[in-house]
Image (cartoon, rainbow, N blue to C red; front, top):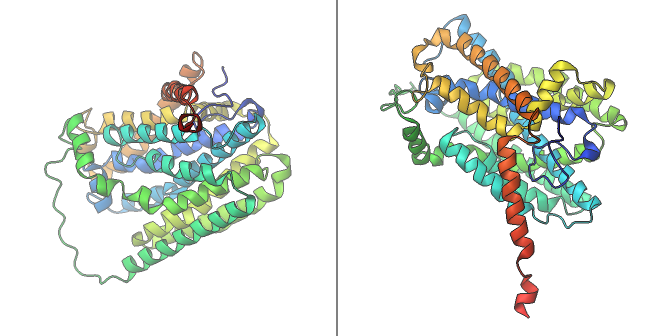
Length: 407
């Protein structure tokens, strides 16, 4: 297989440069984060009313299937979003380290990279998934890239400040929801027309644009959290989380994330569904730190990734392509513009159907990543992004400097 990234690769989800390529945990963690996000998003895609039905909680299963659904959703809810966000911060730390070693200015051409990521996210939002995270990551990355050029002390202040803002807002919103008067819920009207079940591919794209305010609310809400987790990822990487010297750090994160936060997250989520914001954006990111530490500890002790690790690492090397493709494939299976399977499944059948779809699409992503990397060094989206960045960066270098124009 070819190396999927160079030290100047603009993709913050790409494999690290050759100096860090001996850390298999990075690619494995990236692959787990990508496939794990589908574990949350697949419940949206298999709902006959899509994102709207998922938010409103319509067509819920009954009896044991309801509890199975709640447990499965809670196990994935927010954990892999947090892991993916942390991995973006690690990617930025790797890029900055590469730039410093090469004597290049930082953030240098990163604004072009952030702009391309935003464009990629915009296309993904309109044509693939209204729950796209890439647009928010592009804005967050542009901010954090500047912060990484400041002192360690300044970065720590920004991290603590962003985390404090996020916790304060999250607490206020959770209290407002919990303490709101509980009246008889208004009957929910079915989505009519339903672009998810009955509309064309274009109808669904227009629907996303028409409801962009609702669908783009999450990236705005979690902006402080994203800044904090980007900075956490960068600090953990510099602190040697994936190296032998990080053994004590890994143990602490394992205890905090998996022994403390994970049981609390599951208990809160199953106790009251109204606490979903608290768990998704509060406890879940801490669980994600435990997951990252577990992956790092696993591969710190065993240098060989094994068959499953290699498949996950391949997904991690073409992460952007798989992130978009897995949602597109699932949409084609479930939405009306494709096979329309979601509308044909009863609420009680939806749980095993959703689990089956998730396993199928994950398998397809692994096959795709393996087959693609046997022939190409980058995923298709990564290749387009790399070419676009090279073109834009070359134009930036060839243009006269502002100072020379002024003279």
